[in-house]
Image 1 (tube, one colour):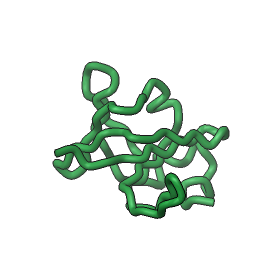
Image 2: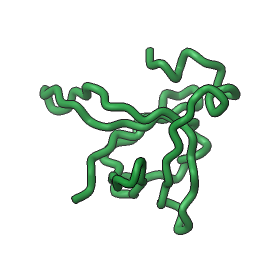
Image 3: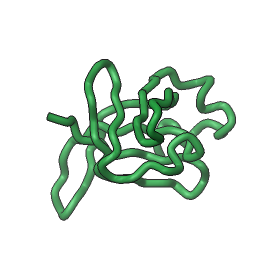
Length: 96
């Protein structure tokens, strides 16, 4: 269970303070959630990836390859993991 999933979904934005700029809608959109680095298992390999957890409704049209920025660093979305309860974890990779 992630830190974010421990809170009622309608209180997430008041508890978390990381704000990213999401570029998936044409116009940049500010989204509040939790930005962190987490161990991700992929193809039987564990690695650390930056991730962003937020309410699904705020990134419902996100797709792999979309860009977002946090602390003046641009990332691309390489994975999308909705939890089925209203939260989504975006798996990120720093853009070159």
